Length: 117
Image 1 (cartoon, rainbow, N blue to C red):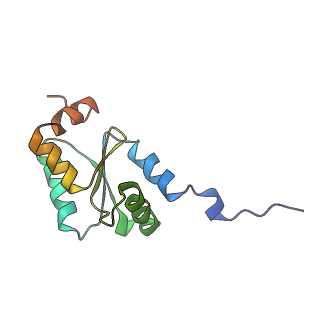
Image 2: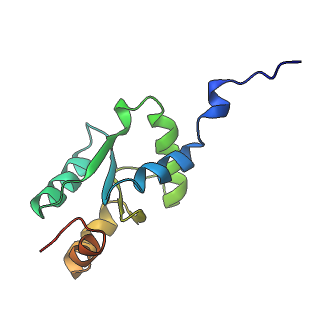
């Protein structure tokens, strides 16, 4: 009897997909194109001289599933923006801004190879 495979059985779990994408670049932002906090996060990194990889979940085929996976990873209902640096989950905008204000963001970016200065 031939085995039947559906595309859903081949595609990775949404959390696995998020982790995979997050590990492919020094800085990864999961965003929604209409979100003002996402825009602020992108501007922050660009202002620091970092060119983040941005995934606009409202434009991704499985974006809603990925957004739910991010919510589970964060343990929060606030899902975007979510930032990964060096493949490690930093968190939502509150954690990013906290790291920026207390001076730990730039060293993280340097360690991940996103900044050279």
